[in-house]
Length: 65
Image 1 (tube, rainbow, N blue to C red):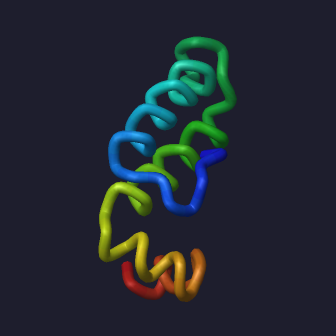
Image 2: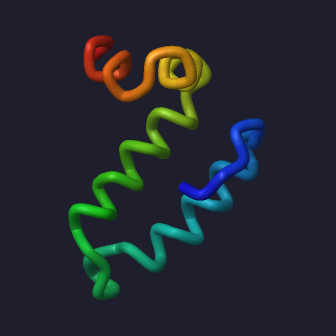
């Protein structure tokens, strides 16, 4: 999502909204990239998931689910 690793919840939310407008399939964006953006927002918006991602990457998130 092109964020600084120390980004707070407001910065994450603001960047997600900005990118969602560009990537949304109804606006001519790529559906796969939009799904990736949604997954990134889901992970970064949840402190527990963000901690797991920071420590183990996407592998840790997938194992968590």
